Length: 106
Length: 120
Image (tube, rainbow over all chains, first blue to last red):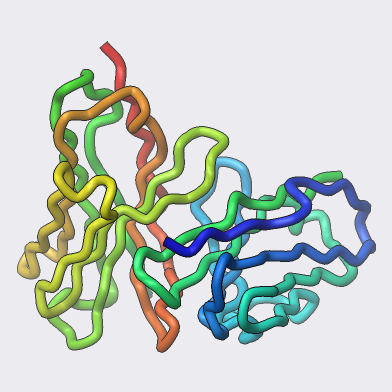
């Protein structure tokens, strides 16, 4: 199975800040990398797919980049509703695997 | 509008079997290309893919759980059913179903999830 790691595990930020979360795969997943946002008590919500494509309806302050084994999610100008946990996921190789999550908190 | 909703027991005893139902709307399980996955999340832990069923009835299972999982679909009822046998307290968590879509197979949307506790 492809192992996914994320860093940091958590970070503290303020409204208006810019933050970057990194995700690393144990082997190349080309661009089969997706990002999800999960708020407490809710289901994950797709933000970005194929490493850098913004899902319809997701604000443009979310940006994904990377390919191969190293990826990042950047949120510019953090808004109060962005405080959540972010998960990366590879869908290149079965089984699909997720990173452990990065909690963005105030 | 595409939606999925999980249902099933909130509490099961160790060694019992768990049956969860994912009721879909806004798409059909027999449309070419449709895939539905089951994912779980133990409290405070990472998301874990469990199983997937495709429109053509192809089924895929997490290797470590393959002997305990069965996924099926009832197209007429728009339901996908997951059965897990021999439940253990380590199986406690929130279980989600999600539509698998796009060329890269992202999960969108997800159901709201259903919390399952395994305890005697």
